[in-house]
Length: 85
Image (cartoon, rainbow, N blue to C red; front, side, top):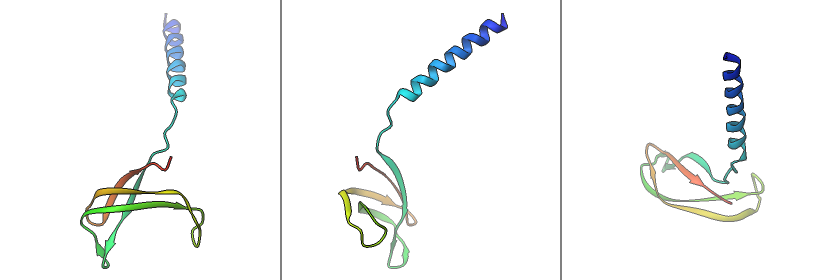
C-alpha cells in the first residue's frame, strides 16, 4: 500500500516539475542601487535613466535607454524592475 502511494507521489512530482520547467522566463530583472546627491545619501522621488554598454569603459550603448519615473529613494537606496527585452 505504501509503495503505491510512493509511486503516485513520485509521478505527481515528476509531472509538477516538468510543468515548472516548461514556463518561459521573462527578460525583466530587479536592480537595486544606491544614489548619492552632493556626497550624501539621496532621499525623495527621482527620474532615473538606465542603459547597457558593451564595455566597462569607453564602450557604446546596446539598445535603447530606459527611464523609470517617480522612483522612490530612501537613505540612498532604491529598487527598480528593468526590462531591456
